[in-house]
Length: 422
Ligand SMILES: Cc1cc2nc3c(=O)[nH]c(=O)nc-3n(C[C@H](O)[C@H](O)[C@H](O)COP(=O)(O)OP(=O)(O)OC[C@H]3O[C@@H](n4cnc5c(N)ncnc54)[C@H](O)[C@@H]3O)c2cc1C
Image (cartoon, protein in one colour):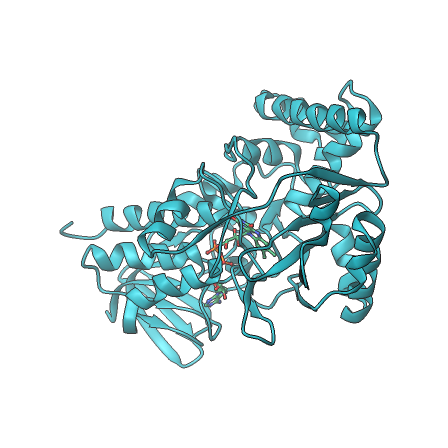
């Protein structure tokens, strides 16, 4: 056996699992397909060397794992600028905007509190459920916009019971956009990776697993490797793309088939100064038309900029068009909502995650099959010596960096339990 454990995928889940196992004295190696770590956390760089997060970035004080990890590596926290008014486009009267906000919150609470064992709920999509709620139409639209923005798929596609069960685990009371790291979240992934030394191998895509009573043989780009246990720290959809010999049992295949990828494009748009603040605007902008467009301020010392997220069906539409056209469209929308100064950006960094080679999408995979209520539990149980882990499967903050760290710790504990002599 080459290793006690092979971890596949160096996103935050795999990095966490591998470092935990290394600390416990396990002979572990982490294989990553790409030439960088971080997975759905990635940095892009402007011409002057300023790095920005093109993937996962924000967190808040209610996310203890990411906060403590960033502290451990001495990373500088930035408080996201949130003073001033939120901009709604098309404009909504101030009193009504607040009522919609509170109404959406209340609807979200109703969703979280619903009895998920109720068979009638298992036949509904998120859209169906929203249509049945006795609320005013602008609140319903606000709720659907929130679902599209956070889960990056049309509410018509998302299974309601999955959405409610997922949202129950997202327990922050402060805004999830509260904080980010000055030196990027991606640099924190690099910090973790550095502790692994030569236990990390980049450019090693895994294609196939042969599972036997003795352990697992992995086929990688450069040959075979064997281990007593394997952790597949990749999104569910990427785990489904691997070949398994013998084939996975039907219940696991069904669980892996239940997911579709989120669709998002993230733009970091740099300006000379945060001009929107002159008008007492926070920079946070929510568009009702088109649905799936959202902006916020991501300025920090020495950098002024907005982030724009294009999510769900809108991201799918733009994915098929030239990037330059999307840039022009987004600048036009910002100019309408925040002011003409938006036309004078100093540069744009765009990252399209739709159909991404190594994640297939983001922020996370979501469940569409209405009858796949046990898909997550089935994957979490896995089929030792093969374990599945990713942010999607986390008991807290699924779909977030926090969830990835929690999932990594959880799977490492499971692996240790099954390791002889421990
Ligand atoms: C645009 C965007 C914005 C986001 N914003 C936020 C945010 O503000 N806050 C937040 O908390 N979260 C955010 N997220 C979500 C967050 O980034 C993810 O939930 C988290 O990073 C997932 O980590 P993971 O380790 O579970 O999976 P991944 O990061 O996807 O890691 C999986 C790794 O496996 C590798 N891999 C895949 N297949 C193979 C293979 N066959 N062989 C070897 N390696 C393989 C991949 O290359 C990747 O490195 C965002 C994501 C995106 C894309």
